[in-house]
Length: 122
View 1 (spheres, helix red, strand yellow):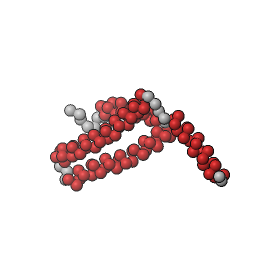
View 2 (tube, rainbow, N blue to C red):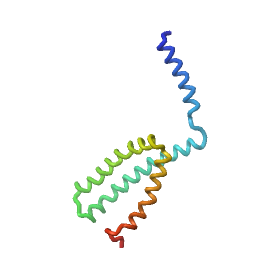
View 3 (cartoon, rainbow, N blue to C red):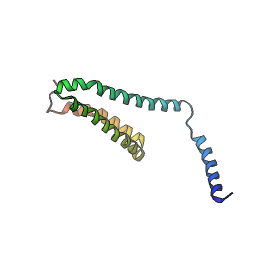
View 4 (cartoon, one colour):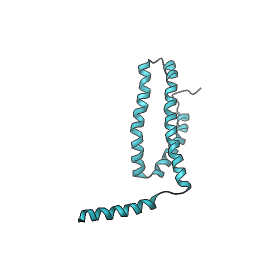
């Protein structure tokens, strides 16, 4: 056996043992699966909401079909940009820090919307 084959067989044997012990076991595995599935389902629901609202957007704004089509295109482009960006941010700063900052932003936006004075809410 050559030295390259020997190194390969040793690295594969060590990797298999490491991977076997790295699997998540128990209820945490199902919680992670549920959370990932919920995120995917919410993305589909969110896209459906945009598609259903197109007729109301067109009627209220007096837009043409081609102009309203840009709403879906812009939404898709935003998703294409934000999904890899959020993965990079999670890897760079930590997933817990990104999640906490997103929750904080989500909670603070209604406050800033209520404080603005240029658009009457009533």
